[in-house]
Length: 384
Image 1 (cartoon, rainbow, N blue to C red):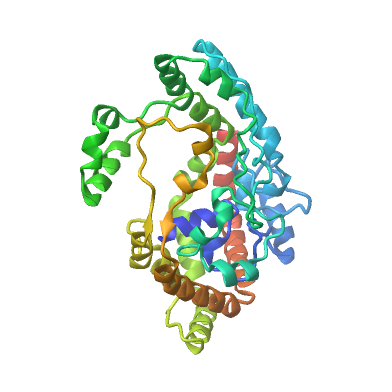
Image 2: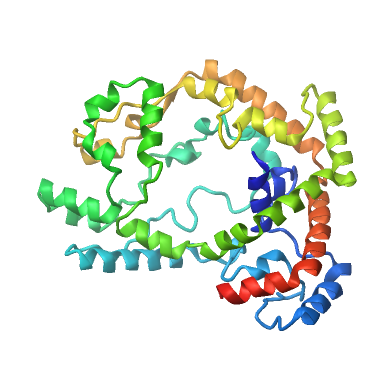
């Protein structure tokens, strides 16, 4: 992962640098207590900061200067938010002459994600989720008890609306609802795409989606609901500064000492990596290239062929064996074992590392706040 990714994650309240081995808190903690008075005093001296949300503890972070940005995911009512989206879709569809009934699937606001996240248990069973994700049937809508597939859309009233349409009307309905594919895909016969080699298909999809902007009622509604234009504008204006903060974190003597200690700990467990970034790149790759590990895993997984011209029965649509990926566990198991071993070692060698990253980042964040309060307040005012 490149440093721009790490910086953005840190600034937007997510785990900075993916280097927290034991913490699952996805919100960067507020500035340390001994910096609180400095932050508030600086903001007051810099000018009117009445538009800044100081939070319950009165401390400032960079996120306070991004209007409307919310990282408190636990406070979000996901079902209520999805209902608002569905209502917007209904209005959009009605404007195009179609009926759409707002419907919230049963897996929204709960689904298969455990309420209590236990990282230690997860890494010991699934590692980083690169090779092992396919063994977790919950990813495919199947419970751990082996129950039949539970379709979250089983009671969707829009199914009856679609079934009552003729073929041409149904095609137009879905085009308005979900949007159109890029022109090159619409104009290329499916048989021609299937005849391409894997490399040709990858190049074809890359070209098709390079400058494509999705349309359709669903996409428009979700864009409005989850728009983070202010966050994007913040990153554009302060990207160089954020990169500098990241570089300072990386070069901080406390972080360098911790990384050396982590590397030594991993070596003692039989895994040689200079840094955690190197470890993650080994399994995941970077922003531009898939890792060899991931490529080898994917070569062992076969997805059922999909023929869009064949209409499936309701029973077939609800049969996971027709669309779940297939794999030989004996071939895949060595990759899973390697991944789990490294992930478990990383967990054990990363004790308190997130807290250290937090401490260093907060120190540097406070320095940036003190030195750039005028710029931050100006951005907040211009984007509110």
